[in-house]
Length: 423
Ligand code: SF4
Image 1: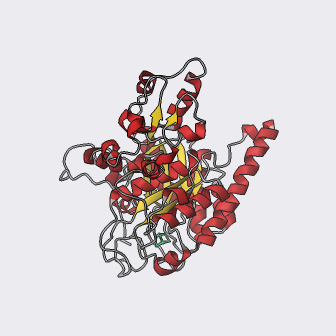
Image 2: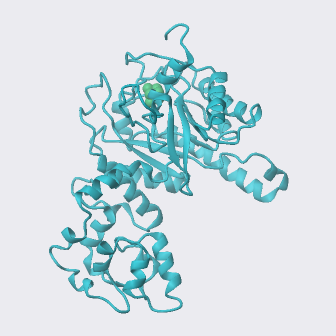
Image 3: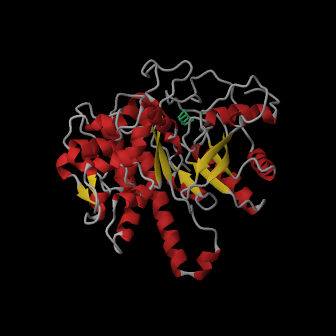
């Protein structure tokens, strides 16, 4: 660590080291402007996230320290990597957060850390930042704390008293992958933290429902918990990634699983690939994740390829529909909610509008157009009161080519992948 390091130097090092954690839409973005001009805030740790209600908020996203005793091969802060090291004092992070907040740069803080010595002591320092922000500074903005690797369940749970969200990263879909790339980490340990946090979140919610006094207290981790999985660092296919995500959602009621494409780092371990996986893979995983949680799909329905991966050329819902044409067309005036949710191009909001609208009258093609949903993708799979012309082509061999978005649209979708409700 450099002696007498300025706060700005620390900020540069610790914001840069934090960018690999998925919590925001602009993580990892670097805009080259030769040090001139305005608009590149990511270098100083400001990133953007989307709240569950769709608001975009700015967060100060930093590590407390990038000193770490562990050697996770995919991590830029690993002990064996020769990088400049820095550590913030608790008071410095509190001050930075308040200063940035008062200048209107940020609305919240995302704080993670390497493991500097004792894991519980490191976790307690993260918690202390949140406590001081709340108690000493009266800060009401969003605070997301990461569970420190190896911290006890009790230490992680203490963070929930002050943070909006606490999250333990599972990192890899399978223990074999961790054994290979991060032997000091385990899925069981991450899940133990999730279990303990989940128990406390549920207990606190039930206490708030029961007791007016509890409702006056700060809620315990009101934004719940999330986790992150890195994809593309090993050969583990999407099927395993999605099975693990699905299990975590069901077992621990996580708000979100974030998928982060492995990003090659300097002096990487020989077990790691030299190239990052295609960005669109991350995007397909987010789409499949959404279908598992809100559309009633199962992993086995979405991943059917022999190699266990999602098709990169077509979104997973359309891929399912093309492979199950016998299910279509569905009549928008008669089909159940579950059947409508399987129609390409129809989202939960549009399906809700269809169900409400058809209570009063039969829906026509013009009504579908008013949904502002992608008609080209949807029409071959549905019939309306006045039109089923496109549905006649449901078995056409060229249907896939006709309804798929063009290359430009797909690239645009891929670039938006990290923006799916990430906070
Ligand atoms: S414990 Fe965290 S900071 Fe340390 S090497 Fe592993 S991933 Fe990096």
